[in-house]
Image (cartoon, rainbow, N blue to C red; front, top):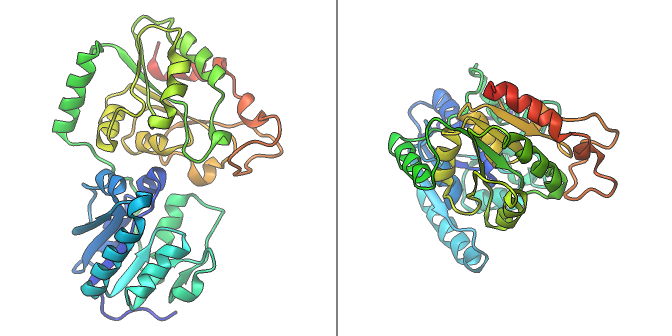
Amino acid sequence: MKLPTTVDSILIRCPNWIGDAVMSSFFFSDVKRIFPNAMVTALAHDPIAELLQDVDGIDRWITFSREKKRRAEEEKRVLSFLKSQRFDLGILLTHSFSSAWMFWRANIPWRLGLKAHFRSFLLNIRIAPSHEQHDVLSYQNLLSPFGVSLPQPVLQIAVRPEELMAMQQSLQQIGIQQDQHVVIVNPGAAFGLAKCWPQEYFQRLCELLQRNPETVLIGIGDAKGRQTVETIFQKFPRCHNLAGKTSIRELVALISLSDLVISNDSGPMHIAAAVRKPLIALFGSTNPLRTGPWGQATVIQKKVPCSPCYLRECPKNFCCMKSITPDEVFMHAQQMLSL
């Protein structure tokens, strides 16, 4: 495989999803280990750039909006800028055809990425995808052609002291005290309902957790998931619905201040793993060997013949998720909270 001989300027296209961005957060420092004198530019849409703003190895950001009404205008703007920069190497952490097509049109001479979505002809350093390892290792494997020994990946999502202080003040304003047990509940998942533990199961779990008067529950998610959290919490005291109410940086700070996170396979689950919080991850339609929390966590998944299916909605009886009982999750929660 041919490789570039001179690399002074590198462009890295960041993933579009929060979980994937978290799992790739170590990647930029690995690139710097291989090319210590190169200028590394990261290309990402706004929330991902905000999430990864403090990771090591990024010298400069190029950001764009993914709003539908601005998509064509933003693509034209970004492509024009990329052409002007004369990058030596472009690395795609995305799998899409469109991202490789942009790099090709930007006249980046060396384009590295996974063989996927019929885009191999747009790449000249092609890596075969592997479904036998964690996605974190798959990201690192993109750099294998350069023959440099790299350390075990360590996710790099961090929170600033001022962000923690601001979030502590916000929690105090809604009545949460520092000596209470803060349990974050994340009942949603962007990919689809097949990744979501049933609402009535979350409701039963919250009922069990509320038996301890020192436990406070906080529901998180995007604006679309706010009603789901509202439905789950409606019968209980000491519950706060912050779904759709936090920025991505505020979400990182909130998770960092929690005592336990209980989540479906989702972006917030990966944030909890990255900031090393006690975590219970509930898996059904996806494979934790590939997309599970990186590092220590309690992963609950039942062996059923049809899982992992990677479908957005279950066409059967949802046995993968319904086999996980609230009592089982509560037992793990008690142990992790030392109640």
